[in-house]
Image (cartoon, rainbow, N blue to C red):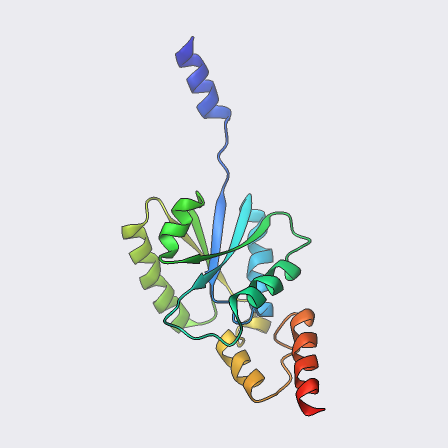
Amino acid sequence: MVIILMILKSKYTKHMDIAVFPGSFDPITLGHIDLVLRAQPLFDKIIVAVGVNNQKSTLFPLERRLEWLRDVFKDYPKVEVAFFEGLTVKFCEARNARYLVRGLRNASDFDYEKTISQLNTIIGKDLETIFLISQPEFSHISSTIVREIIKGRGDVSPFVPKIISEQLNEVILADIL
């Protein structure tokens, strides 16, 4: 009887398919948002995870980036926002995530992400990387370029969510006045 119950349980008990979309999100761009929204149907939950690297300087503090991510994804119950320090693989293990979601804008992204994916496969148990190709309208956007536009006091509204561009415009206006 116990064996039959174990077979039935394993056959009908579905584990959650959890994916992690890691990044610095400094700031989050429309390309990032597009990837998360396109990945939603593939998973039960997507954790948008801000990786904290104390060796790397960021333009925006962690709390601001988390606030923006929570605002952007507040209406998406399958999306959770978190942060982590250390290896992405360890974070995935701690959150029972079996998948990483990564976006590819071009061949350079593919070469880099392929190497990272292979390393993650070696050090991460059963961790698969799912690559999504950027939509053409977002393939030119990167957080690095957006940061440079911000530093030059340019208009980033075509590249970031409205809430971010509005907050940045307020800061720039406050500086001018």
